[in-house]
Length: 181
Length: 197
Length: 203
Image 1: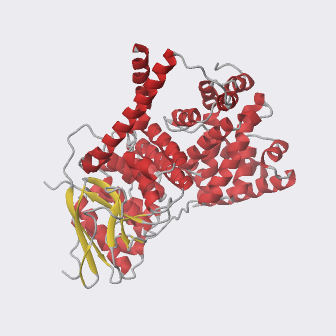
Image 2: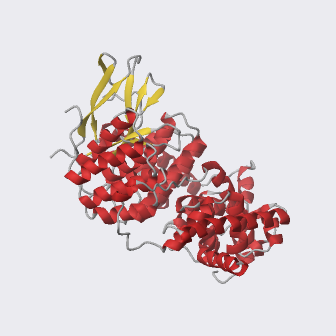
Image 3: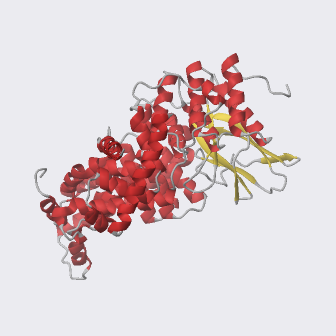
């Protein structure tokens, strides 16, 4: 079943073969986990949003209009789940204190630490407004065209372009500060 | 400058496109499938309506055997549940709370103190007594001057608890570490009980 | 008759996971909530996560008057946090460490910092350090500050009993109006420099 198209697998699930749904989970899990993580900023929320998206997709599967494009339909559900979860929880505030406490900071880092530049990007991303972060991720990471983004989000193309532009400006500002510091 | 900026966005996008490692926790697929299996199967929507349409059923000896087995099954389930209730009520809390293959450590006696001059009743509730405001053994006594206290058994380990004043007001222990509760909106206290050697 | 007996045994085997759930849940939760919570507990069991905290979380919700949907969300979130906690602390983490780490994650401590604490503490349990960390963050000490303090304690081998006293001293200072960060860093200096907590002012 792994090589079968989304349409074939959806048809099997709709005929009662629950287990084959796992193929779809496997197929889209990693890529969409990445989006959810960047959107929500932490793994716990990302996994919750992704798990919710899959179970909602299963429940409403009969309403998927184009089963061959199950992935795109699932992604729309996930984008909405991320919006709902993000709005409900708010961003986790990150406060960086530069003061005498520095004398107690550890000099060495855990050997398994990710590179610092990547961490700065993650932090900068979380400082964007949610709608700008969403637009930025859809455009630059998911590589969608503006028409696709508009269909996915229900937002007009010019508004989306504005959000992407503002997100880029803000990220430049945040990350240039880091570089010059 | 514009080339550098475009270059910066491309670099950021490149970093963000890198796969997460690991993408999700190891049990993710199992959790999704577990939830999905509990939902009605898509084909059963049609089967369910067939099952609920009234019609005449002819009983044959084999069916009687299955009916009898089902009745026996429910009787057994009932008996086991009753047995479980008795077990939960009487077995040491340590084994009820911590699944462990080693011998459970005995609960330790812990004193809980709250100053509440206007209270009529103060209970200690936590994950060691099912959060039960009426649990015997966890009802504080008024010692005078608004000081309430109770010394009660708490299993070895990490626990969350709270005081409940007059069965309605939840009060965190002023002297204990707090645990913010984003789930139910009432902050709890934390205690780590260690075995007295 | 034999067929009936085999059916009975077979059905009992299938029913076992339901029977294994705490009977207090079935007495206190409505059916849809019980079904959903049982599913989460079963998943946690499969993932080798402690299940008692999930049952306790549901009972806590009942005691606090929460509705079924909120209880389900809370139990699921705790299950996810415990999964993250176990991942960060390694599979050898005890149930208490997983519980304490889940509380730390809830206030915003990262998995990465949990892993750093695990590395810093070596073979020593991290339950009390995690409870202290959670408490400091709850008192509005910024997460990086609180984390670095607790990491320093772990690397210096500060005992659990001294950590508990540190936590009470900080809380006492804050109750008397001190800024939480100043209180925490001041008390920490004493703890790390002298190898133990300084005497309380009244002593």
